[in-house]
Length: 389
Image (cartoon, rainbow, N blue to C red; front, side):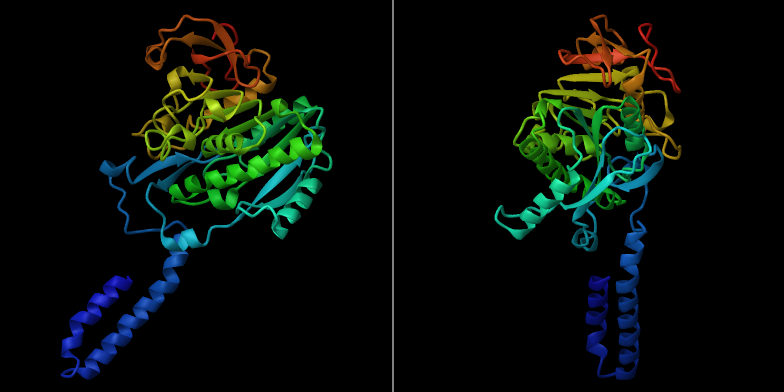
């Protein structure tokens, strides 16, 4: 709008001496409109309204698309750079929630931590060390540790996190952390939270280092689990941590702005932990299509039969992008189990031409597994089909 106002003023300026009264009135009008727009535009942006971006079908998957949030609901996302106003107003704090796994109804301890970098000798670092000490006061290093993080338009209250937390607390005897970066993830401009994933991952790495160095946790018993953008956050966390964690699970790692755009050092990959398992439930649309883990599972060929996994289905709620965390949550305490068959390639997965060894997908995956696997699932809970799947 400011550029438009400047053009208008340049056009009318030569006539100013002849129609000074009219010019002054017009200038007041233009100035008033500019002032109103300056106030109203940020409000529009806060509510995700940017009316000058046309939602043309031919631009789908280029400048805009529908994505699933952490509750499986479909929302509009712009695949464009956010306005400068939104970049300047990025919240710089995230929350870490700690559950000791003893009680499903237990209220977590919640600590607030900055995602900004700091010098080792600063007062901020000393304050953060005190915060870590408080967060880890009841941490039990002799138990396995599960760290959970959500993706775009989600929070720790989303099903993508709550289903996993509930399953692990039901099992018991485990430390559970949930990372809440809701304020950064809640943007209609997808590239904004995608860009901040690395900062959240770095903050998670500092918690890992503190657990190992201050509470003597075994890094091989630390398991990072992330859904969508959260999968890449955990990849960053594993690569930044000074102590190599035992396992990272990527639940349909986000594809837009990551696959075929940047190198493996900038997304989750098999080098980020001792063992990296990935569930591709919406491969090639919202999730990565190519294998990026130590072992990669493609349920129903990577495209489960829900409408949300089709580029043509832009108005349906529910999406198989979210099935990845549903499968994993069910696997934690499943009696049937998700049995997958080894394949020679992703092409064999698509054609269901697989006849290799059978392994379990999800939480009980054997840590010796590697390669690409295919499995069938039911189309509603319970999803696991057992050995017949």
